[in-house]
Image 1: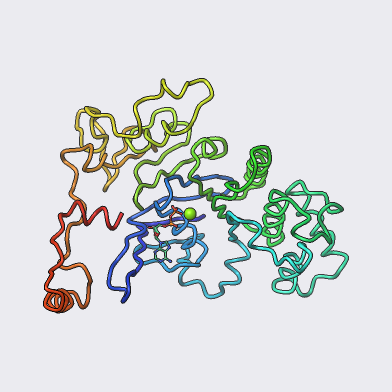
Image 2: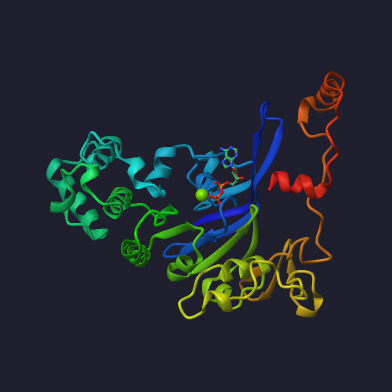
Length: 350
Ligand SMILES: Nc1ncnc2c1ncn2[C@@H]1O[C@H](COP(=O)(O)OP(=O)(O)O)[C@@H](O)[C@H]1O
Ligand SMILES: [Mg+2]
């Protein structure tokens, strides 16, 4: 259904847009009907950028995203696309206008997509989609956003997406702002939606919750796929040191803090899951496949001697005006910028 092929995103940043920031590099994965795929990684790893590209809210720099085989950047009618693909985001409060009743989000959908549906039928549809997210119409319709909880508002946004009869939902950190008990309800709701055949791209930085719902997991590190596979395999047998570090940072009930393995550093001596031939892993592009469907990238320069150095030093810091800027600034101030090592540069772009 949804398919990403070698997708990259480069933002131009800095005063004159002279610096490039690679937020996403060469990411490929698929989401099928009735499947929850979680996209996991620490803050800044490019998860939201991917979600935004799938929702056509950000352009794709390289690679392609297709939905049912059609390149989404070439779809003729964005409206037809949004009938099938919708997003729900972290902060439900920001999606409601406080001066209108919360159910106005349904009215706008009706006006935009279903102007011909009669009042009676529309009410039935709203009731059905509220039931789909386990909300009681009597408790939410006609209420103002401040009279509803974050969990109720989040569910109303999902109900709004369901009115469109969507096939794919992009859920970006939708439970991060909810309290613990509501979180589980919303996660169970995602399970219900999957049972109805919906595909869900579930974006989260919280691994403990990622395991709870998803069928497949994509672990992102600095915009690249570090590891991907069936969720139970990735969590039972994490191969990449980054995945292990993420897992170790999840507090667990039965392990006391002091007994936890030492910090988030990659354990020294562990073989690189990509380069170590002893692991006998068939290699495909930048990812090795040590077991069927479970892919893993190189452990990276901190943990693998064979790792490619990060793209080093393309000349001077500030892109277009660099050489002249460098000299002029130097002559004017009498101080030339210090040459930085590739490591320092990498730190800057990380
Ligand atoms: N519109 C933008 N312009 C420039 N840089 C951006 C923009 N959006 C995100 N970034 C950068 O891209 C990287 C990935 O961001 P994001 O996808 O939001 O990460 P995540 O959701 O995993 O926390 C970050 O370094 C962020 O600063
Ligand atoms: Mg994000």
